[in-house]
Length: 340
Image (tube, rainbow, N blue to C red):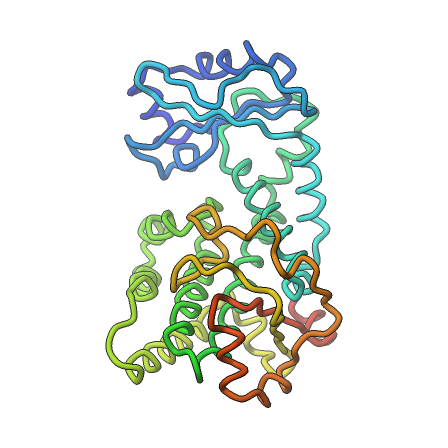
């Protein structure tokens, strides 16, 4: 179904579905599907939003479809997606054990990218869909996929909260950033009922549309920069921690805190672009480096909670001084069964 935002944008520029479809099929007649995705398709766009046109092809033999088209004042961004890549992303997501994946840097990174990929398809408006893509189309509109998105956000919030709690004793301002990101992730988990669209910049609108006044107040609190002295920053962190404890999406794990352990990988760091690292929203400018130290790191020697507690302040400062150290989570076997 075409969203009101997309309908208004196309009407404003005098474009029809046929115009967009012919733009692609004239260059790529073998396309498996042609869709419009992005904020307009998800009904969060405005008069400044571009039309994101996606052509899904069966292989890498691309035709001469331009990456950008201007039609009657409309800016149309064109992009190729490979069907095998989408199918691989679906297999990874549908077969993933999220409780295991959150504890491993490389697996969680791959799963995150697959989810981002499929979410763009799930919010898309279809112009042309063939039988070859129908199983994929059905999956991204299934309840199972929506549930996995919600669970991913919940575990991401829990992972960031664990890191914030560890950073708080020696790095309160950095812990504040982590707590803020954990709150935004928890709110995003709740907001999946409104839309699966991935991105913090649409989260506020999701909360407004669902009339979630409590969530909106917490959203604005999480976006505030920490002010005042260290004591005030610590009080703010404690307030955010208490609020996170009230999230229903985190209850399946928080109520089993004794069975939950977390670990840090001293070798796995992100490049520091700013004081606040948005690990879960790479498209805003916080991307994983191509050759990340964690790529060669083995997950067989995690730093367990007890070991972390025995570290002195200088060790903790080294871990956190130049970016987010990867916090992984681990669950006991009894918790895994109960949390599913």
